Image (cartoon, rainbow, N blue to C red; front, top):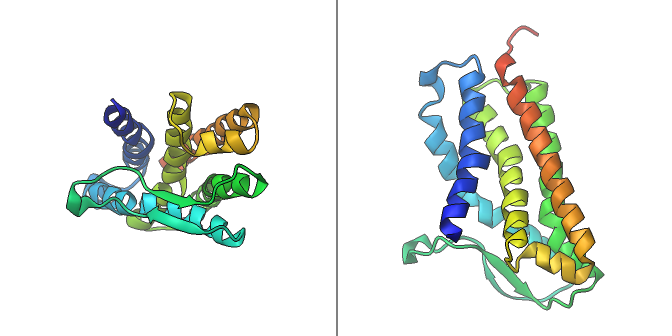
Length: 200
């Protein structure tokens, strides 16, 4: 059931917006059709790594000892599951910031990605897709996947946020961050009809 939900979220938050962005753009099908699986592979191989490294950075900043970690799925062992950073979690204020750091990074990436694509600084179909995927869609997926999993009972980052703050704060962060991600993604997909504009 978990794998089915996760696959559905990848389709909804990663693949569908990426395809719509390209389909609505002025690029022809031949210029981007091969890019979609390539971009997906880049995202899939790096998503977990970047998320867990951000937790690790937070742990390092606050002087926490990391005693076990998994930064990438062990594909060679048939493992396609989640990553983790295990450290001396105590549910204090430091832990709150360590846990929330990847999602703050997501919001920052969403804003940067939206502004880059809105200003049409990037001209090539590959780089535009890469910015869309790695800065916007990956952030949308990261927030939504983790928060929705928490809502359905998963003991993940948002549960750790609840432990280090309150249930209200954890839910407020999850809902507000997810709505922000959806809004900026929607705004970006909306402007894709004008992409790319070479006349400036």
